[in-house]
Length: 209
Image (cartoon, rainbow, N blue to C red; front, top):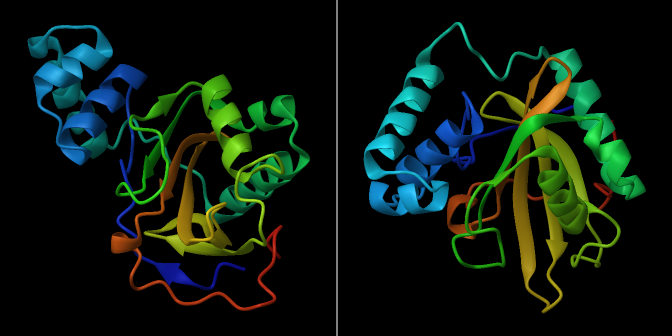
């Protein structure tokens, strides 16, 4: 399983520290928002937003507070549980595999509808995930998927079709800590996925393990 190794320029990679620190870091360093706008999103001052981002950067490089600690076996177990939960469509089942402060970070490059800001918290992320990947999602055409390693993190490469007929290729990777998902990185910006190998016709959903 996961014998494919990808580099996909994951959005908001390694979101460490409390949620407000992660948001400040992602909005400024990934989405290039000025701290004045970051402060507005967080409901704080510009000085405080700078401090939050600074603390998050220190957390990213600090060996004492990792948020992605799972070994390959645990990553595989959690990814399988994530897929099963999204396939079931049951919110409670999905909440069992999400950390309370999980963050969902997506990058569509403006090519497809996507959340403009990182989504925080298990309930919000679970509902968004079910909308994107569950049976009630808008991507109702055939889905191809296979497990992959993305920058060292276990995840999924997927291909499907948007409701307007456009093909969609995306990579989703999960950060895992203590048996729960702490971050979901969803990269579907076609400009950043130009080197993806094609999926085979038998790479169906749910993915084979």
